[in-house]
Amino acid sequence: MPERGQRAGRLAGRRALITGAGGGIGGAIAEAYAREGATLCLNDRDASRGLEQVTERCRAHSGAVTTTTGDISQPEGAVGVARTAEEALGAVDILVNAAGVATEAPVAEMPVDVWDDMLRIDLRAVFLCSQAVLPGMLERGWGRIISVASQLGIKGAAGMAHYAAAKAGVIGFTKSLALEVSSRGVLVNAIAPGPIETALLDGLSEDWKAAKRAELPLGRFGVADEVAPTAVLLAAEPDSNLYVGQVLGPNSGDVMP
Image 1 (cartoon, rainbow, N blue to C red):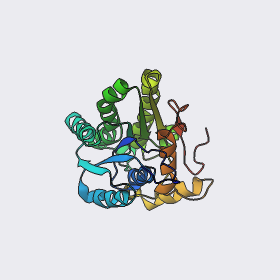
Image 2 (image 1 turned 180 degrees about the vertical axis):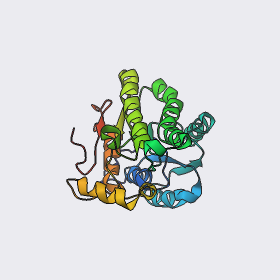
Image 3 (image 1 turned 90 degrees about the vertical axis):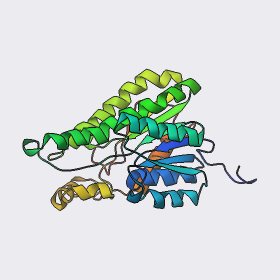
Image 4 (image 1 turned 135 degrees about the horizontal axis):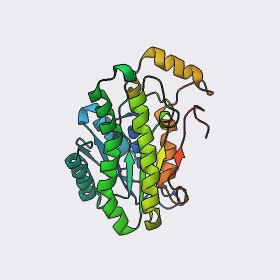
């Protein structure tokens, strides 16, 4: 409980599972949630990807942080991560689907396994994790599912058709799930950032990044801490109460709906 005179965090009392929390946007969201008083379960594929460091930074704000590793693109992995989170937290009120990868390959030369891996990690995992936490949210009549998509899922990108297709799938999934469950207290929304200075960009060429930077009205890529406040907005009350199937775009002006 906050001391007398202190303002409780916007997520005080809420319990959040965040995938892809070992760094980048997922890590920034984890720290923002910790600052706002949420109890956290942080997931990444393996702890060596930065999960331990993010966890320590979160604990500086909130001691109630646990971690779990696992391949959430597989049914047993997603169910296992959700079960671990529910056992550690008591329940999952908020799911943030932030795990993802990005690579570059033209369609004419793209191996099928590159296409399949992208959809497995960036889209299938969103479905599996959402499905795993939904029963508890629906039973309690309250929940927030927030998925990190991309502005490229709206506008496409040469050399990144597999990534754009996966993120467009996340957006379509978000809108469809929102129609299914919003009347039962579970609000589902997406964030579609523009290019963000994270390790995710390491898989893209310098030529691609230079060309994309030149397209942006803002003239620069964002940083993860500039995306995290949107995830706080979509999780907090009353802030999020009217957001249903929405796609919010901290994207440096790359897409203007």
